[in-house]
Image (tube, rainbow, N blue to C red; front, side, top):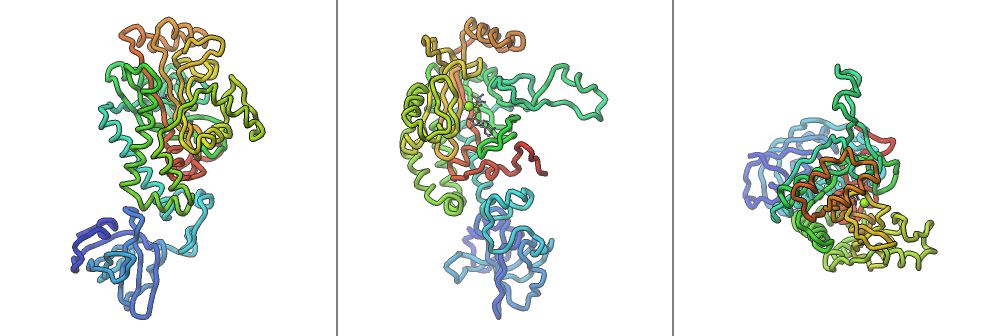
Length: 452
Ligand code: 4AD
Ligand code: MG
């Protein structure tokens, strides 16, 4: 029978069961009498040891080539693994010129080097582990919401609105070859979505608790280690939520439950990342998981930062946005525990955030979660559910006409509600200790780069 490497390694039946395994050669070692191969098929970090007698023609068994091995699954004498495959037949499916192959046998390539080969780097241990963790985390996020009764919504990728109002949009139009004139395809200018929030608000008005988890796009001119032009966002929207605490609790639960699930489902992969990329990060992560996240207001955050003004290239004052350096400082200041920053100045935030109506230092009910490694991980808020206040906000931004449908939500059975978005790549950076966002997504897109 055909087995994945993972199933072969976990097999209880080591009394010579005949099996077939397929994968890529990760190592070759030949001794006088025997030949040892390690074959990996991506199903696990660990490779399967193949033992063949030296009479096998090993010339084509090069690092990187794909093979099919048939043989008997037996108990291994080595302490490193439980089982090995005693080869009876080894067939090379696709050979690999190991000299020309950019990934070299036994070498530990820096992540930065591997970034040049998005089509090949997935065959290394480290990218293998990162991408398996990514897959596990995706499943964990879906089950977190499912367990709590949230309905999953496919929000559109193409939209005519700019949710965040930051103007960082990619416009969508047909290529020159279609028969429909460019301008007329949708009749209105259309863009790749920056956030599914507004569509989720529509749906929370029917399903109460909804979430979406898909790609979002931002034309930010940023070459930073935490921005991409295409990234995945987990967004939730909840009706009948009346305060930020209820929202913050869901964010904290989402972070912790997803991480616990990843840690229990692929501990080897997480361990490899910590060991090779960020020694010491294991303890940092445990520290995050066992402490309650902290809460400070934006005003308090500014006070903390002003006292440390010498540490920054730019000292913030009340009314300005926090920069990455400030966010990271605040996390350090909080003892490396994730910290919620609440109630930002109204002037800094988009039209949909709920007005706190709190006098001269005018704020909205916004909340960001700042974490080690990346700084801002979540952004969320209560939404302005009061028709007249929202109407004025829209009017001031010149959006009244475009957002009639959004006002309708406040005319027909409006409820207090709120939600948040978590950058999925930043989440992976935070739990794995990966410094550069380009290393936690299979095919990164950013300014001046769209390989493949
Ligand atoms: O703070 P943001 O802009 O919030 C929103 O878009 C809300 N509409 C979400 C909501 O309430 N439903 O983005 C949310 C998160 C950020 O905190 C950050 O983690 C991530 O998305 N993010 C990016 N990640 C990678 N590359 C970028 N260019 C990102 N921009 C935002
Ligand atoms: Mg934000």
